[in-house]
Image (cartoon, rainbow, N blue to C red; front, side, top):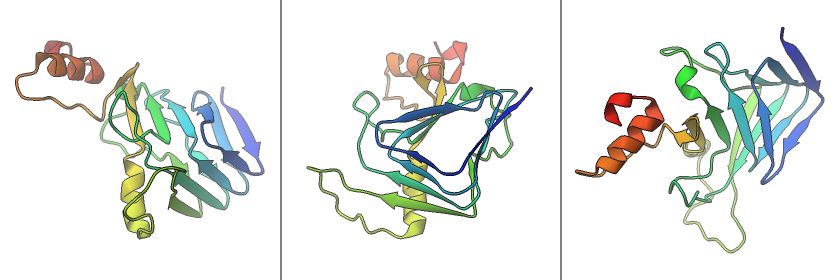
Amino acid sequence: GKTGLCLNNLTLNSNASMDYGKDLDLTIQGHSTNNQGRMNLFVQDGRVATLNAGHQASMIFNNLVDSTTGFYKPLIKINNAQNLTKNKEHVLVRARNIDYNLVGVQGASYDNIFASNTNLQEQFKERLALYNNNNRMDICVVRKNNLNDIKACGMAIGNQAMC
């Protein structure tokens, strides 16, 4: 059966990670803050568990890039995303209010940290990552006439015909 976990408040700090989603409903009665940590969600029965915050959820992210992928380091990583029910909305975080904040990193410079909340929501979407085993599914890039890229994308999306 399902197990429920209820906390008063939850803060996930920088470089921390939290796994949830398998037989676990996570409810935060107060505030939930992801301060540059990573939430690892696991797909079960075609869905992921929703993190429910009773008040505010804050998503604090930076512009650090993962050197292996060339994309931003994910704040939310969905594992075995190929098993999600297709053509269905999946709610990852539910709260009265969700706040998005882009923060600077010591020694780094940014052109515009003071962006609108709409712009920050769009930037936050770039910090979501879909994985099939250890292969990232949402960043499949194929360079012209590069068979290795085609094979890597086939592995990531589970299409053996491309491999």
